[in-house]
Length: 254
Image 1 (cartoon, helix red, strand yellow):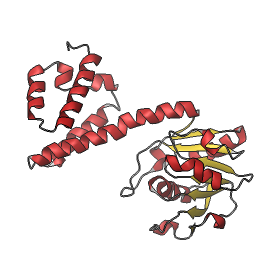
Image 2 (spheres, helix red, strand yellow):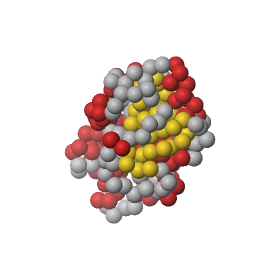
Image 3 (cartoon, helix red, strand yellow):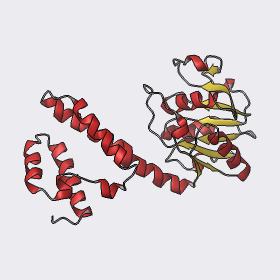
Image 4 (cartoon, one colour):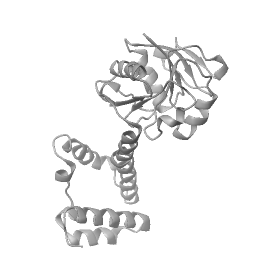
């Protein structure tokens, strides 16, 4: 069993703790969080601490904190013969350079505290300084996920960038769509079947083949009507930018 301490109990840390507690390869021995937090019933038996001085010895210390806090937090940890790994998609191993045995344990998913998540379907990306530590992190990842891949820091940065385009930006567009509908007392639920079908299509079609809409068809009348309806200048600017990009992608006349 890989004795593990999770450092941070935010969205990522909480979901990892829940998964590790069910793992047959891990022993979740401690959870650190600076502030008090509501602990799910399944984690009640795990020691919960608020001071770094109370850390117990473990095989792995898993830092699940915001990207900008990783290096400074890592520097506060005592050097020892355990593996220290972070869960960031954008930070390299250099963020943990104080530690001789450093690694990355990056779950590629969007996490929200309000939703439960089955990590078995979530890709986990692994990196480590040493082969034996990489093997340990892979073993741990495979105990909670069916999709484990070893990739470098540079590859992971590119993957994280693509993830922002694939998840964060579309979600912001959902928010904009909700605002447009709200202005006219229309329910956002009307769009949910469309959103679900759009996401489902790319399971069987490349995104470039799944594209539809007025920009893809070159339907200038509809585009002009949409622009006329957009009273919010920021929304109009984004509509024009995305329309321009789609037209360029499919060779439509600009």
